[in-house]
Each structure stands twice: as structure tokens, then as C-alpha cells.
Length: 130
Image 1 (cartoon, helix red, strand yellow):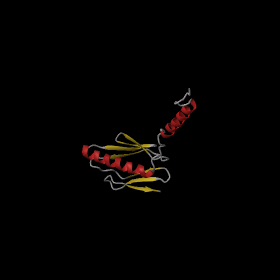
Image 2 (cartoon, helix red, strand yellow; image 1 turned 90 degrees about the vertical axis):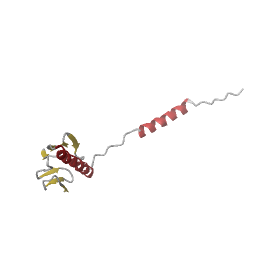
Image 3 (tube, one colour; image 1 turned 60 degrees about the vertical axis):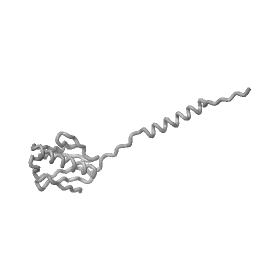
Image 4 (cartoon, one colour; image 1 turned 45 degrees about the vertical axis):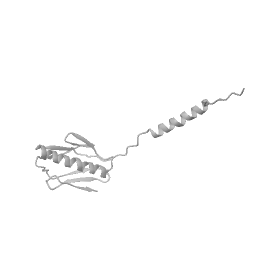
């Protein structure tokens, strides 16, 4: 009588488990996070700045924006600077309930330096990269 094995051998099972586990390890890694570059950060800043101005005007209260060494604080929310950017001196901007902002220049040190220039008093700004 001839005996027929219809199962897998131990070696075949181990090879299959090895291949499946390698696929899960390689495919299951979260993508490497690349630091926000300056342009992405400026888009985020513009959005948050406009929200802070609207909050000040709609709620009739002063909103404070603090530029610290590694991040900025807009109305209690921390936003990190782009990778390899920092600020030497802490600066604070107050947005009045009318939307008025005193003229000031904020400089983020990096490559290139980012200057956020508030010159019109109405809360509008322009950006210079040098």
C-alpha cells in the first residue's frame, strides 16, 4: 500500500512564515517623517494667524502669539518651527480685538532666514527669505 503525504513539511512551513513575517516587518513600518520644510510651515502659520485674528475680532478679546526658541504659541496652541530653524530672542505679538497688530519683524534663523514682517498694523504680513 502506497502512503501519500498531503501536508507541508516543517521546512516549507518555516520558509512561508519567514517570508510573511519579513513582508509584515518591512510593510508595517510607519513612513519616515520628514520635517516640515519652510514653505509648508509658512502655509500653516498663515492659516493659524488668520484664525487668531478672526478669534480676536469675533470674540472681542486680545490674542497673544509668542515666538519662542523652538516653537510658537498661538492662543495656547504650540506649533513647531521647520526643521533646523530656531529663534534666539523670545518675541510676543498681541492681536487686539480690532485686529490691530503693532509693526514688528520676526526672524527665524535657519537656511535661509525667514523674516515675517508685520508693517501695516492691520494684522497683514509679508515674508522674506534671505
